[in-house]
Image (cartoon, rainbow, N blue to C red; front, side, top):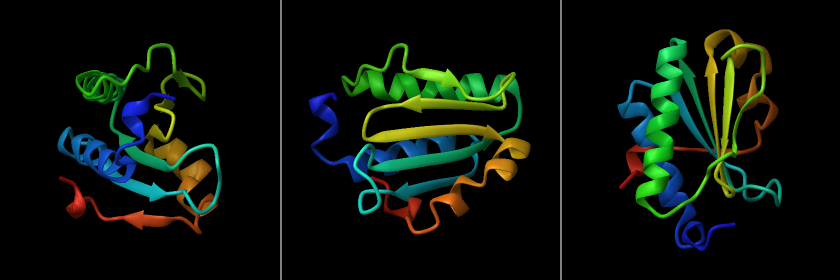
Amino acid sequence: MDDTLTADNKALALALGALIRDHKGIDVVVMDLRPLNIWTDFFIIATVSSHTHLQGLRRAVKEFAGLRGIDIPGRSRRLSSGDEWNLIDIGTIVVHLMTAKTRGFYELERLWGAAEILSLSEAR
């Protein structure tokens, strides 16, 4: 895990969620998973409107990480056929970019329903 992620992961997750929202991510949710597991601290879930939108958001996330010295090459992967779901693993933050169909099918917010949903208005 990159040391730059340990300073203030919550602020980083909120800033990344705000970036995704500002790049037209739909229904962006930042979930605090710290009390629920040990393998990651935050999920960011966003709906994409097209393959091109997904590519743009993925690029924006990677640029965001790069500007902060966070290396994530090779840690982005598709979890379903086509471009329905793309996961970007940043260690303590996992970004899920999904189509509306896939997001509705997997219902990650319901699956992790005990997690606190953070307000993007807290983003710095």
